[in-house]
Amino acid sequence: MRMSPQSAFPSLFIALFVSFGVCFGSFLEDTYHLNNYHSYSLKPNHQFGIITKAYVSTPSTRSKGIINVDDYGGKTNDKKDNTEAFQKAWHDACSSGSTLIVPKEKIYHLKPIKFSGPCQPNTAFRVYGTIKAWPKMSSYKQQDGPPHWIVFSDVTNLRVDGGGTLNGNGKKWWIKSCKRNPSLECKPAPTALIFNQCNNLRVTNLRLQNAQQMHVRFQKCNNVTASNLIIKAPGDSPNTDGIHITETQNMIISNSIIGTGDDCISIVSGSQNIQAMGIKCGPGHGISIGSLGAHNSEAQVSNVLVKGATLTGTTNGVRIKTWQGGSGFATNIKFVDITMKNVTNPIIVNQNYCDQKNPCHEKESAVQLSNIRYQNIRGTSASEVAIKFDCSRTVPCKEVYLEDVILTPAQHAASGTIATCENVRYVNRGKFFPPCNI
Ligand SMILES: *[C@@H]1O[C@H](CO)[C@@H](O)[C@H](O)[C@H]1NC(C)=O
Ligand SMILES: *[C@@H]1O[C@H](CO)[C@@H](O)[C@H](O)[C@H]1NC(C)=O
Image 1 (cartoon, helix red, strand yellow):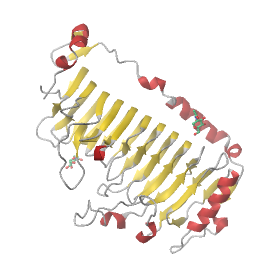
Image 2 (tube, rainbow, N blue to C red):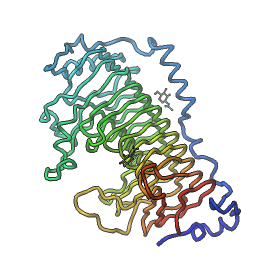
Image 3 (cartoon, rainbow, N blue to C red):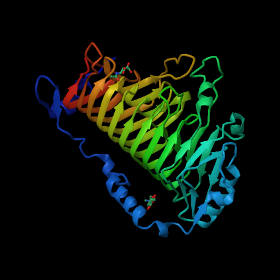
């Protein structure tokens, strides 16, 4: 079933429709213009300015002391495992509200490790050097839940920064992935860095590379700033999402460069008031809401703003993906000021997402997608279908707004671009190309 805008919003359309020109469809008086993100508790620029200032002018007032991991036996050489030194150093830093320093120009090796709170205020973890994952895969066996490498858990007001590198040493894991080799059993690989239940968290100025699976996951956190991150893994490394956000509220990601083998940023259920600004993404699978609703689960995602992103050579640009059979909603999602460079699916909503070996069957229920805005999205599509709304037949996408969306073919593509729009109720204003062919 296809729905035209007219059938979807009859009264609204009659009241507000103004003919605007032949080429680019309709102009709709913008009743939606009161951007809800004004009500977000975090004000990006303001907030960011304060952080920068505090960081520059008052470092010494932040930390009661400095704890150098080298003083805990963290001496480096190729074969040495530094886990114990880090654990002890963390204990002292956390219990005194100090800054744990990982010195520069050195490489430390860590087995799976948990830096737990609660800690005294002003605890920080400053990486100048490199921390590399212990290579032996059997060290990562987890009794409780999925494998991990570095976890920060239950720390309030934590700051992690320093400009150094966390290297997940992931090659061995990628080779053993069922995505690479379908004859192998599908087993989860460790997430390189997890922040669990951390409130008032700042993660800035760090490099993450070659994670075993996901690079960094924020889960059950509140009030998070993540900025100036560089996240790198090869485009063919399996499931190496850059930044994964789950059950987290009030988060700003800014000025970050992410190129991996999976989503640059993925935002899943329980996440609210998430902003991503100034993101360079590629290679990878783009910026994603979802996947949502797997295994008939209920999903809730609201107030997401992706503003100012450049995606280069990614398989998707901005994507929303949900499994059939899920329930719940994703609402008030905005993609604004986005440049696509040779992106295979620049704008895509896929409510028939199925990332498993067995085919997924059609189901009646779906995660409801509503109030989704695409504004000033420009650039080139590597494939013919530049815009794809593959929404649920039973729970169509509604309140979709497209404004100044222009996606032309990448140079090598012979044909033009098209939009496929299934089960979507949308309105457009400004430029909209390629248009949905109804
Ligand atoms: C958010 O966290 C920052 C520290 O990262 C803190 O300064 C600020 O007061 C927190 N905001 C709220 C509303 O708790
Ligand atoms: C554009 O993307 C396609 C498909 O990903 C790729 O084959 C091609 O080499 C890319 N072109 C450029 C100029 O990067």
